Length: 435
Ligand code: PMP
Image (cartoon, rainbow, N blue to C red; front, side):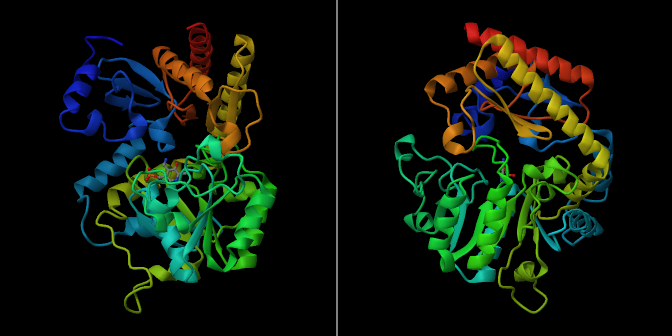
C-alpha cells in the first residue's frame, strides 16, 4: 500500500457517497480499491500510472481486451447516430441472427442488459411456459442476483453432512417463499440431482445449470451429469436452462457442443456485448413465444428501457465477428499453456494447488484434493488466507485476477504476455508462500 496513492485518495473520497466507497462487491479491495485510468489491449493502467496485465477482463466479459479498435469504431459509429433511439434497430436483428446461427438450440432471442436479467427472463419464461412454480439449481453456483437464482450460492460447511443440500438464503431478507420454490441440487452428483428432480417432478418449471460454475470451483461438469439432467428434465416435463453468461466464451457455438447437449433455454451475457452491458435469453421458439406480443398481452410481458440498445448490439456484433473458429483454437491453446504453467509453478514452489478450467478460463486453487463440486472447492480459512496473499502478491507482480482466483484470457495477449503472466505467478507464489 502506497500512502500517497491516488487510488487510495479516490477510495477515501468515495466513502462519502458510496457504501464503503464501493458500488460493486466483486471489485472491493482492502486497504483500498484500485481505480482504473484506462485500459489498453490486455493491460489496465490505474490512477497511479501502474500498468498490469489484465487476467480477469471485467470478470470474463472482455474477450478482446480493452479499447479494441474494431469495437471502439463500431460503438462510436452508433453513438454518432444516437445511442438509444427508442425504436428497434437493425442491429438487434443482426445479433439475434448471429446467436441463432451459432447456437443450434437457440431459435429466438430476447435481449436485456445483464446476465442477471438473462437468467431471470429464462426462469420466468420457464414458469410461464410450464405453469409450474419451482426451479432447481446447483449448490454453490452463481447465476446473478435475481432472488431465486442466488439461493444456495453459499451453504454453511456445518450443513454438508446433510444430503440433499438445503435452500440457503444468500442475502439477508430473502423471503421464505423464495427459498421454498428453489430446489438445491448437488453439482456433478447424478443420483443426488436426479432423485431431487424426480421428487419435485410436477412442481418443477426448470433446472438451471452452468456447465462450469465458477464459484463452485470452475470444474467442467461431467458429460454424464449434464446428459442425466437433460434426460430427467424431459421425463418430468421441466425445461433445461443453460447459464452461458461465462461459458459462452468456451467456443464458437458456446458450451453446448462441448457437452453434446441442447438446452431448452440459454442465458447469455458478458462477451456478446463487446464490452457494454448486455444479457440475452434464447431458446426454443415455442418456449420463447411467451414473450411474443403479437397476439395481445404476452404470457410474459418484458420491457427494458435500454434492452437491445444499438451501442451494445453493434459492439457485440463486432466482438463476435472477430471470434471465428481460429480465434477459439488460439484461445484454447493459450489456456492450456497457462493452466499447465500454473500447475508447474505450484510444483516448483512446493505449494499444494493448481488450476482448473477449460478454454480461456482458469481458476487457481490452493489445495491438492480433487475439486469436483462446491464442497470440495470450498476454501477453509488457511486456503483462503493463501489465496488472499497470492492475489496481493500477483497484483504487485503486475497481473490482475479475481480475488478468489478466477482468470480469463483475451485475444490481444501475445506469447510474451503469457510468459510474463506465468513468471508473475511463480514470483507471487514464492513471495506469498514465504510471507
Ligand atoms: N451467470 C453467471 C454464470 C455469471 O458469472 C454472472 C456474472 N458474473 C451472471 C450470471 C450475472 O451477470 P451480470 O453480472 O451481467 O448480471
